[in-house]
Image (cartoon, rainbow, N blue to C red; front, side, top):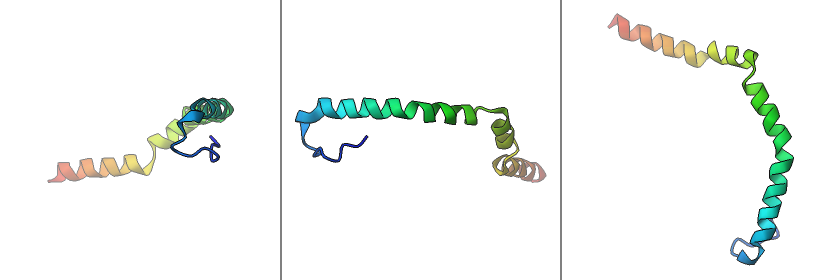
Length: 67
């Protein structure tokens, strides 16, 4: 949250900081929900399944079998 006006050692403004954090979290909820939907979509899961990371894992597996 935007609390640049509060010094790091100013414990007298803790309620102000908590309120600012609460407001920032509420504003971020729609974006967080969108990211969760995108990350859990079938298209994204398929993309991750066939990603290069998975291919490299298979290469390592086959190299071990050859030895």
